[in-house]
Length: 193
Image 1 (cartoon, rainbow, N blue to C red):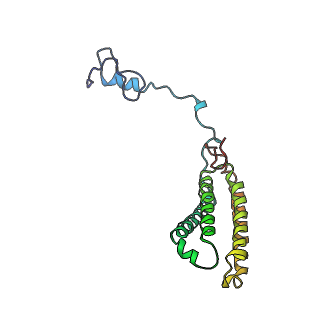
Image 2: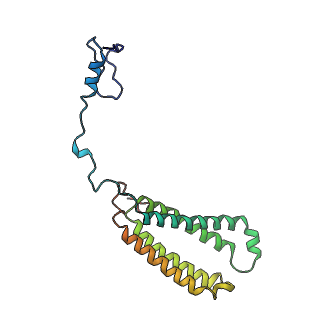
Image 3: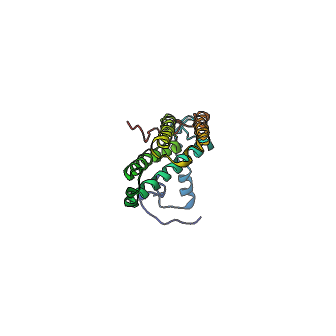
């Protein structure tokens, strides 16, 4: 049998047990010592409910959609600040309005996308509420603030697209309700205890 170096009282790698100190220090003694590890009790293993559930494709799609809208509004915010003087010289919408609305949707969108991605229990209700708020914001902005020449020509398409997106988001959240709140991390970006 091959001989191991004598290290008196030193812990062996792995942290369980000691190197044999009987002076014989052969490989067989070390192997038998390493195979006598205690198995953790069954209480330390997570139950089926505690295991992380795989993220459904619809939730991934929703999180990516929210992320795209958030990134678009981040660009809106940055460009409003970068071209402030030019926007102020134009008649119409104030650069402050453009910058603030962009910033608000960035500050709301990124935590919402993260909450969807992680499966926080509050994410579905927050997504439903923010979907309706964003649709209301879009239509108020379109009809009252940023009136354009094309607003009259494509309002029907925009209305149908808005309704379809709201229905899709509500449907996707309903199909994925088992995912939310069943993950091991239960703290939300929206509500921390």
